[in-house]
Image (cartoon, rainbow, N blue to C red; front, side):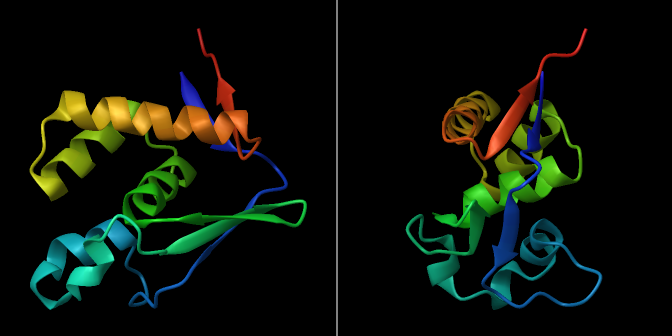
Length: 115
């Protein structure tokens, strides 16, 4: 199973990242220099929009969507987030799938069933 952004969905980050660095790399390499509020689950890091309807996304959601855009699969997403936050992969996988299914139900993502 693969997830992709719906064609009309646009994503915008609310934080400045160094050029040539994605959010995950920046967090991994510079974790001691990051303001602790960024790890707050309520802190808005990005927004996605579809047909003028906006949805605010927190840090973990932004990481997940960034990896979806880069065509990473659920196992890769789960592993990277698990390593970053020192959490069990099974817990992360459940949370990732719930988040992605919520975005599918709201029309921001499309789920592709590949054989």
